[in-house]
Length: 130
Image (cartoon, rainbow, N blue to C red; front, top):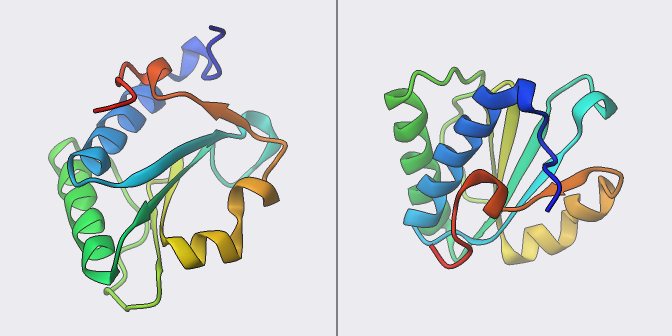
């Protein structure tokens, strides 16, 4: 397996691992990571996950914010929870998108950013069935 994240981005890789594990611990579904590298001036990576309901999305976001804070990972956004099926958390080097299944299908970020490379959970040291 070829690594998508360059070795010079070890801090990004560690922060993604912590974030993904946090989301998986709260039963996030269909976790995908898209790596942009030099293709985007905005961020290096998107983390996209699905929640089953607005309360589940809120729990995912709260757990992720807790993990980021505990590990001194800086974030730019901290919006109040508003039901609507899409939450965004900007951690500068990566942006986390938490969707309801309906909104994820509607916005289809994976298709919109089809030029991005997908990072496997295995590359982050996370077993697929964690």
